[in-house]
Image 1 (tube, rainbow, N blue to C red):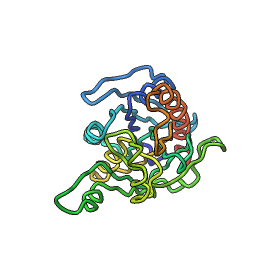
Image 2: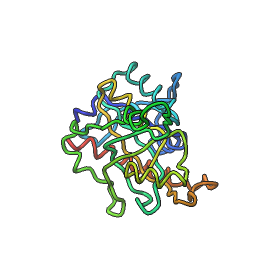
Image 3: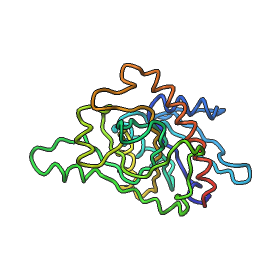
Length: 239
């Protein structure tokens, strides 16, 4: 598939990367100053492409820095970020896969000028037209929804008290730590970008079901990453 000929798949959180290595069992994993990496022939036997997987790290500092590192070192045509996110209870179902069309960083506090302008500066609309048949992408399971829309990012787990404001201001349904930084850096470099995130756990106005229960997050992360790796195979067939 032409759009995936020069592709790096960015994986952020440590649990996500551990799951990817467990699922794909690469024969060789190399180290870089920014994170581990490996190459793997990927896709069906008749249409395999060489894809680099890279552990970019958690949080927007690591995400932004590792994204620029990958672009400078390997000069990919496309970046694909596969990972997890937390969902807002009542707004999205656990297990849902989000095909991200827009990202924004919501943990910016601007008190000297217009805060909305500051948020807008770090918002990114993701152009998915480079995958003409993206509308045919499926999760591989009729019980697992695929939705398109906004994903908000911050260097924090979802705070229950923030949910109402995020829904009111942005219509948000889920949040993560890294996708906003990855999409923003990719756009600044003119590199194609695709973000797919799966909801591992839900947060309500009272509490989060994985808070104090990290085992639930790890368990669901393995499920989400297996699903996303399967969808990566599907992407190769979409041209």
